Image (cartoon, rainbow, N blue to C red; front, side, top):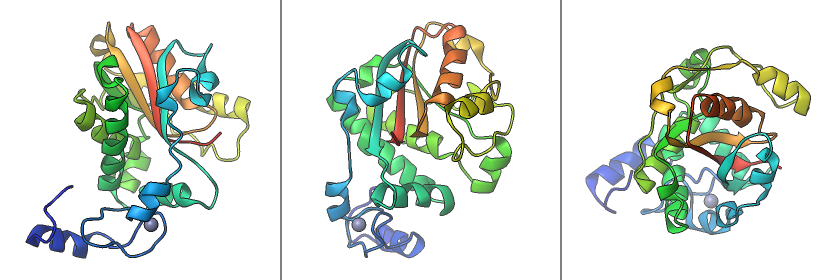
Amino acid sequence: MRVPFGSFLSDFLHLLYPPYCVACAGPLVKGEDWICTSCLMQLPRPGYHLYRENPVFLRLVGRLPLDFAAAFLLFTRGGRVQHILHALKYHNVPALAVYLGKIFGGDLKEAGLGSKADMIVPVPLHPARQRKRGYNQSAEFARGLSAAINVPLNTSILVRARATETQTRKNRLMRWQNVENAFALKQAEAVKGRRILLVDDVITTGATLEACGQILVKAGAASLSVAGIAYAG
Ligand SMILES: [Zn+2]
C-alpha cells in the first residue's frame, strides 16, 4: 500500500507492519515499504523478461509451449532473496507479495510484455496449507502484477486437488511424480482461447509450472507465459 509520507495512516501502518526491512532486518525509514532502499537497489534482478531464451525459458522449453518466461529475483542461499521468501512464507505478509508483484509488473510493462496476456492465473496452494498460511503468496504476487499490467487475475481456474509434499529434498523425477495429478481445472471455459500468464513463487525444476501449464494448454489456452517471484537455478 502506498500512502503519503507523514500521514496518519502511514504512521499507523508502521505500527502494524514490521518496521524493519524484510531483506536485511535493518530499520526502515519513512517512505520505505517492506524493503530498505539499499536492499532494493541491490536485489538480484536477473532481467530474464528482457530476452526470450533465458534460464527459466530453457528449463521449460519442450515441456510447455511458451510465449515468455520471467522471474523477478534470483534466489541465493542466505541472501536477501531468501529472507524475503522466508517472510512471505512465515510472517503473514500478503501485502509484501502484492508490493513485489507491482514492482515486477512495472518491469514487464516497460518491456511491452503486459499486452501479451489476457489473464493471470496463480499456481494454487492446497486449501489446508492456504488456511494455515492465511494466503497464497503466488496469488498475492499475481495480484500485484495484475494491478501493474492491467490484466485480470483469476484465482479460481486451477485447484490443488491433492496435497503435495515439500519439494525441497526431491530430485527432478521425484518432483515431477510429486506434482503429477496434483492440480485440476475448475473453469475450462474461461481458459479457451485466452493468453495466460501462469505465476508461481519459486521456480526450481519447473515441475509445478509444467503440471499446471499442461492443464491450461489442454484446456485450449491460446498461449502460455510463466513468471515467478524468484528463480532458484
Ligand atoms: Zn534492507
